[in-house]
Amino acid sequence: MKVTGTRFGDIDFEDHRVLTFPLGLVGFPDETGFILLEPPTGRIVAWLQSTTTAGLAFPVVTSDEIGAGYPAPDVRELARRAHLVRSEDDTFASLVVVAYHPQTGRIANLLAPIVVNLGARIAAQVVLDSETYSAATPFPEERPTMPGAPRRTAVTAQAHR
Amino acid sequence: MSNGIELTVTEVTRRGVRLALSLPDGVMVFRGEIHDAIAAANADAARTTVDANDARVGDPSDRST
Image 1 (tube, rainbow over the protein chains, first blue to last red):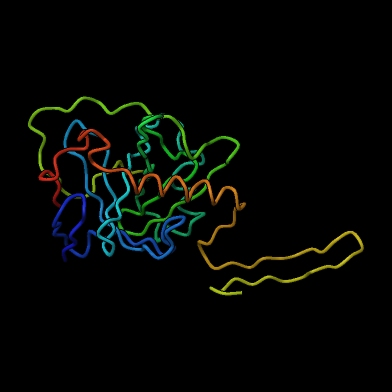
Image 2: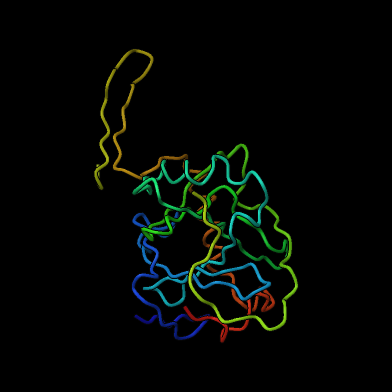
């Protein structure tokens, strides 16, 4: 399959790479298909590119970039709550949507991470405790680019059993 | 209600009404202001461009799946 994104041009991908969000993302309920474009080595921001809307892509980082203890509850519990568990052998990853504001710099939406069942390729944006997490948390600037960054490959976000 | 959501009045008293909400698997309920904050954050993220990130996310030619 192919999607022509407005940011990244033509992107060819195989069907099994598609992440299905049965409920879409918050505010984007009709966007149910995305592919994850991974960052080159040394960079941390990946992009979730819609498979149906060329101009729609969300920058994301793995929750490992946020720090130990995030998210709470852990990703498996969040997957259970979101009905993303298909078997005990499933592995999961969690992603955090980030954004960039010229005035405030990069912010991360820690309130609503995205949980991915890596095997089943299903995902959901879940909501954590609003007393603990914010949808607009300042996020450090990205690490410097490493030379010789390889081309993007498959989803290799940190898996959690 | 739509999308398999059921709202049932389970009790009516002088003090108020008790409701029960039945939801399909995976559907979550959260306050309207929480929904709005998350939707706004998602919209901000969707407006973020590669240029706005000062190209730190890499050259578009790096991106293939």
